[in-house]
Image (cartoon, rainbow, N blue to C red; front, side, top):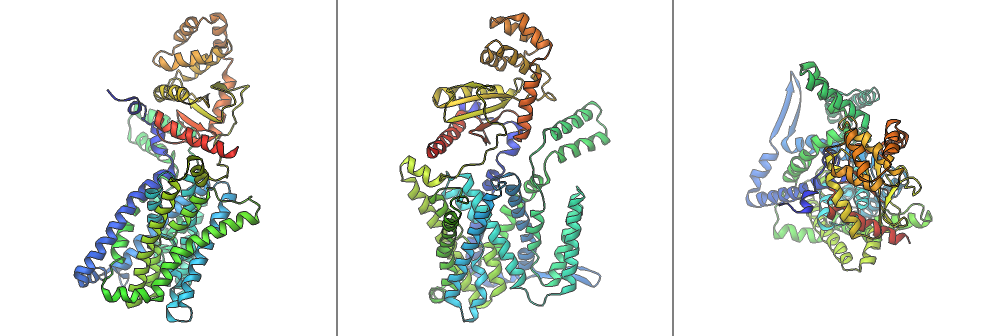
Amino acid sequence: MASAVDRFSERTAWVRRLKTPLRAYLRTETGGAAVVVAAAVAALVWVNVHASSYEELWETELSLVLADEGIRLSLREWVNSGLMTFFFFVLGLEARREFDVGELRERRRLALPVLAAIGGMGAAVAIYLAFNLGGPSAQGWGIAMSTDTALALGVLSLVGRRVPERLRAFVLTVVVVSDLLALVVIATVYTENVELAALLWAAGFFAAVVVARALRVRRGEVYFVLGAAGWVALLDSGVEPVVLGLVMGLLVWAYPVARSDLERAGERFREFREQPTPELARSAREGLRTAITANERLQALYHPWTSYVIVPLFAFANAGIAIDSGLLERAAGSPVTLGILLGYVIGKPLGIVGVSLLVTRLSRKRLRPPVGWAALLGAGTIAGVGFTVSLLVATLAFDGERLEEAKVGILGAAACASALTWLVFRATALLSWQRRIAALLGGDEPLVDLAYDVDPERDHIRGPLDAPVTVVEYGDFECPYCGRAEPAVRELLRDFADVRYVWRHLPLSDVHPNAELAAEAAEAAAAQGAFWPMHDLLLSRQDALQPADLVGYAEQLGLDVERFTHQLRKRAAAHRIADDIEGADLSGVTGTPTFFVNGRRHYGAYDIATLSAAVRQAGARATLGT
């Protein structure tokens, strides 16, 4: 027989799809980081076994020719300038999602990571120039600017398994800003002989993309054609075309799925079920497709490809370097290698942490890091993992021996920064519980997702009214997942004496025809002081919620049946339930059960272990606030 945890770790379809988008993004990044490392190691092994065959492969010319016009690039250039455009597109999508509906939707939280990113880049570049200023290698200063998204977030997930999600959002913002500025540098500093006419064509194609977005054109083929044309025009202009991917990703809005869209999709599917015609099949497919935002659909489509194929392929094409005693001896004294290595390992954390503390002080804590000092230091050290864009800049800035020395610095910096990050979180884990929580979470208040605060005069509450942790559930009495979650909630209340639990109604009437009447029955029982007994009965007997069943439950609980029936008949609680539904809509709730812990949406499973972990973290935050 399955254990209780196994039994109640099920997820609704809504949870499977939405399970914290940032967390799902990071899970893919974690797996992708391992593949990237494997690809880099494979490239190093190949080059050191048979260097000529490695270079022959990646220098192979691949041409696309139409009539007398075409594109002629080496296989490595197709990877670096072509496939990597999709990587930056996905990065832009995730940044836009965080900006619209994630941790950065409160704009004041955007300012500090942007300034910290600029500070980290500035410090890294300053250290590089300190070693190279005045020499021909100074032109490689752009190598030390960016942070590798896949490796940085992947390593952070591996070495800091219990770091706050706010830290991951902070690091993501730092990464996006540094990559965006690095791409601007690539497009301006590392571009020669710009063709103005081609650049104007590229601007025209991009303007067409913006117009199509404004007109709400939904056909992906339109954007693909315009984007491809813009990419070709940028390539002809001499400007590195990967910048187009990031900018187009930032254009794709993200927003919470509206329950009305889900209901409309359900109606179209039911129409097809009743009359399965090709026309209704197309209508049902379109309804299901448009119920999910384009940002989420595109991430689901492209993110696995970029993490598991494109970025590893880039590493395989560029990380190859023949390592021998001569190279290591040159690199040990090379200003290029030392500038990159120390710029990343020392400059990045120094700039990020220093600017964050300076901004906090100058703003009198109006702007401050969303995490504690240890997590902030970990963000600084992990930003020293520069790989993807750094290698890209290195191939543009150098060739020959200097390129080899730059690659040694980039690879060494990635290894050292990862080790430093592990040390930071390992040392933090040795602190006492209270100090560890303070070091990771800090004093910044988390964003609140719950639209309406809990009102003891109105809400149905179990547990002490003054408890430091409040768990709110939006539920549906006919929803089987709510029924399966109920034992976990009961166990949670038994295990934690300092938790209050609130039930709010969200009857999904389009899929559960008896749900709204059951909610009204619970409110009719509440009018006689029996909400919770009725609540428990309804969830335990979800297959029997007809009017006669509800009246029978009132009799079983010893209620005034005539009064109960009268309230049901005149729908006395309809307004109250409508208020709960409005609160759910404003809170972005589209399915049941949906939990909030101290105002923060709980994503993922609702088994006792997962809910207990969320309650403990919320309790820790509440302790820090006192």
